[in-house]
Each structure stands twice: as structure tokens, then as C-alpha cells.
Length: 317
Ligand SMILES: [Zn+2]
Image 1 (spheres, rainbow, N blue to C red):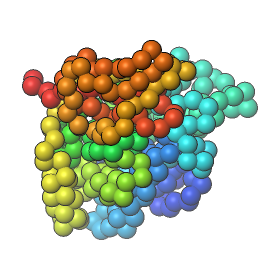
Image 2: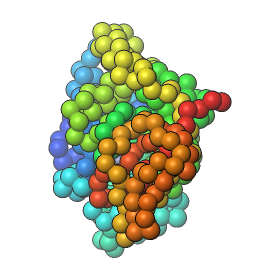
Image 3: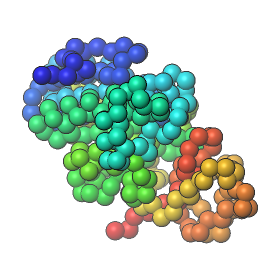
């Protein structure tokens, strides 16, 4: 029997977890745009809505299926990263099993309840899809600076993402435990994180929209229907990222311990070059100094979050 959560109705409501579901011609990929895993990152939700609005009525139809999901509805409602715990650190088999087997009324954590509601939708996508499943987990960040993708260096993902003109960062998916993208990579999905820009920057929504449309083109969901838009977005992203490294690798991750008083020094942005020995941040133990040259990534300028910053290097391999 079909899960009633996924209908063939092309519709969207603010309150719905499934913002949109377009069933196109058979034989194409299934593309999942997962948004709002962090509730203060609504630009990704808006961008995914733009994509839905663009593609819902087009003829010829898209190939395959496009499903747009919002993950953490209470956090989105309150514009906070999370209510009880980070929903993007829970995707490990032990927690997933426990969430599946615990009645919702007995789950204390908002994020685990949201996970319990999201899981059947993703399960059904996995069961029903005949072709490849591509999951784009859409995020934004607190610092200023350029967008990037978080992916493994598997050639299948690498080749696909090279069509987006968004710098790729390898290795973060291994260093962060319990991410959605890491979990669904193991489930056989092509699965990556799209970090679309600063939370409230006016370009962020546009950049995410652009890269998601290029993704849909690259996987073969859309072909000629959007030639002009594709060319415009491609040109925009190429120009936007032309001075950035195409492929980078994580070399350092600064993990914050609760109560350690971490504070990033002001003025850092994504892909800003840094030198070994540079004073980057402070915590209760004193100065935090860069242990290596590289580029800084995701310096934390918000209260919620466990990672102070990352350092990446251009991939030479
Ligand atoms: Zn996020």
C-alpha cells in the first residue's frame, strides 16, 4: 500500500512536511531536496520552493521524481537551529533504530520526533525509486562568504557536482558524526550537503536556486525545458565562484565543548586564506591558533552549533 504521506497531488502548504512532489516521466532519477534540517536556515526552503514553482507545470514534464521536504518544522517556525538537539547529528543506526521503535508520545526530543515523522517518507522514496536517488541536503551558515558543497570524493558524486560550479569540500562528511548526508550515502544515495551562503544574505536564496536547477539538469531531470534559465544560472555561478578552489579537503575541525566559551574573532568568512600561527578564536583556555595554512570554512558566528570552524586545503590529488 502506498504511504499516504506521498500523494500524486502537486501541491504545497506551509504546514506540510512535503512541500512539493512532482512525478514526471518514468525512467529518470529521484531527486530529494531536503531543507530546514536546521530551523534558522529558511533560505534553502525558499529556494526549493522556487524550484518547485518553476517545474511543477512544465511540459514536457521532468524525468523521474522531485520531492521537496522540510525536516524540522518546529525549529523553522521558531527560526532556531534546533529546539532540543541538532537534527543533523542524529543519523546513526543506533539512534534511528531507537526512534523507529519508540512510540512518538514517548520521545522527549523535538528533533527525534521530527526524525520519526521524516523517516517513513525517506523509506518510501528508497523503496519506490527504480533509478538513482539524489539527496541534496540544503543548508546555510552564519559567517559571510561563499557557498560550497560537502561531499565525499567518490567519482560519481564528484562528476555530478562538478556541474554545479560550487566548490566541493571533501572529508567533512567523515568528520561529522550523524549527518543525514553521511547516512544516506551509506544507503546508496548520491547524497551531499549544499551550504548555500550566509543565512540572511540576499544572494543566498538565488544561489541555492541556481545550483539546484543545475543539479536537476546534470542528473537528467530536466533537459530542454529550461535552457535559458540554466544558461543564466550557470553563468552566474561560474562568475560567482571563479576565484575559488574547485576541490578542497578538510584538514582541521575545531570542535566546541559545551561551556568552553568559544568565540571566533570577528571578520572571518568562508574561503578566507589563513596562515599557520594566525590567532583565530578564543575560549576559556585562551587563544586558539591555526595549526596549519589553508582556507577557513564555516567560522561560527551564532550561539548554537558544535563546530567552531574548519580549515580546508586545495585538493591536489
Ligand atoms: Zn545547517
